[in-house]
Length: 178
Image (cartoon, rainbow, N blue to C red; front, side):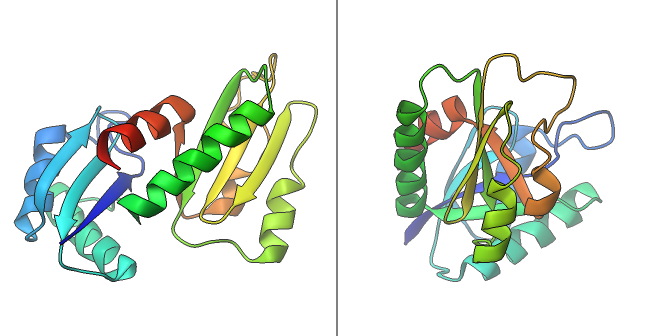
């Protein structure tokens, strides 16, 4: 059995995309995954599976979630070892950029091509830097970045499909499950 972590996108936002933690757990268990746990209500789930194909795991979960909820739930998964490495990179980047106001980690289904990674990193500005490392892109936002935009650097649309978590969630989940 291998341990995986899955991150659900765009749930519990508004009245029509509700997906409570207990329902997530039930849906994950319904497809045969075991040892299922969730962390906070933003769609972070840990499970054990005999499956080894990340694409098959994501497809299986997305089908189960759509059947349960009646709407698509894009899902990004990592093995526990992959996520531990991602969290270590995030912590190192954070340490290399003292004084950040926020550090968001965009979790990606696939690593971007070199050209796309350069384009994403090219959205860096006085507001902050975008740094791509494997299947993650880091928004390192400086104080004063908030201008009412969810994506002040304009990189999110380049990264689809993706979901993001702040550094605190990434490091907490890694410490808890990896």
